[in-house]
Amino acid sequence: MNLADHATKTALDALRAAELFRKAKRVVVLTGAGISTPSGIPDFRSEGSGLWSRDEPMEVASLNTFRTSPERFFHWFRPLASQIFNAQPNPAHMAIAELENSGITTTILTQNIDGLHQKAGSKKVLELHGTIRSMSCTQCYQRFDSQPFLPAYIDDGTIPLCASCNGILKPDVILFGEQLPQSAWMEAQRETHQADLMLVAGSSLEVLPVAGLPIQALDRGAHLIVVNNTPTYVNVRADVVIMDDVAAILPEIIKRAIHG
Ligand SMILES: [Zn+2]
Image (cartoon, rainbow, N blue to C red):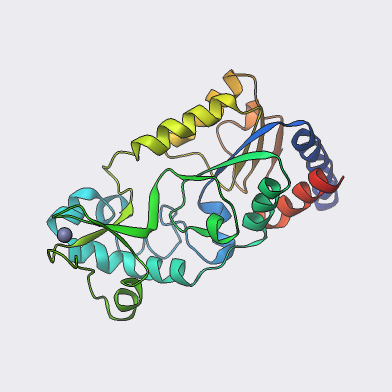
């Protein structure tokens, strides 16, 4: 397909996607790393993100490494934490927030830990892989807002410690080898089963069990739209597939869905 044909196809697919949004009563939006890369946050699971060149994420970002050598985890996590701390939502986050504000019942299920959906103004967000916005003490389990700890950690690598017991604080992000937060996961499945439209935005659907949610939606008769710049395993079953940058295409679709 040449470039002009691709542009025409994308435009037509965007129209069809907007039409599906207009008819929808309950929308679930599933987002992954691809929605935050335009905000400057690398996908730490992807090769070429810069984080792979130093360490293997599945090893260093694991619960086992955190328990046995937390300083190694904190050293690896620091550039990512810095990028997240300084990141701003992009037009894709804004468009999804606008969808919710327009009165269409919208639930966001995200694999991201960056809190950018909330920064964009979205209210109903289930963070399936946890969040960097809070930390929990590994000794006494007290939970703290990350905000006061992040600047010192980002500036000079100071490991955050509990104000009550001096235990090491673990960011509330789900590490490899850790279970998903149970209540968020149950609610994500409930929302998926009730949705009549699911939008996958910026996820390659490679990480289980979250990657299985689109099939659960389809099996209950929901429509499916996939916007991602690489193929996903559910593309063959989706109503609309747009292989493009989410920050470029999503605002257009949602504007058309809301304003006609
Ligand atoms: Zn403590």
